[in-house]
Image 1 (tube, rainbow, N blue to C red):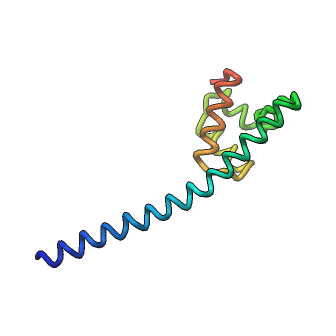
Image 2: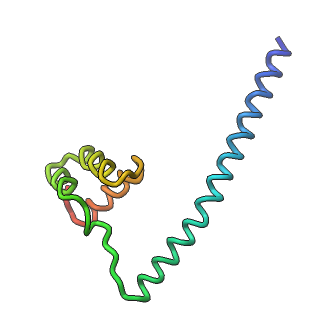
Length: 102
């Protein structure tokens, strides 16, 4: 009984350690992207260029939002751009708040 408990605890510790390694690797990839995004934002501001990510949104995404079909808009945006679910959801929600479309 005690032997089984020791193996379970060791197994959990190994899993936690591996997850920590994985999260560290992800954080190492995110940091350079964040710095790059900040630099691009700075260049756009200094060049007096207004970047509007909603300018080239497919009309069917906008129409779905106007109908109140937020989930459909997210799905359509994902299909058009290939982004992940969270990115599409965040984008559609930003689009809603920027344009006032509910």
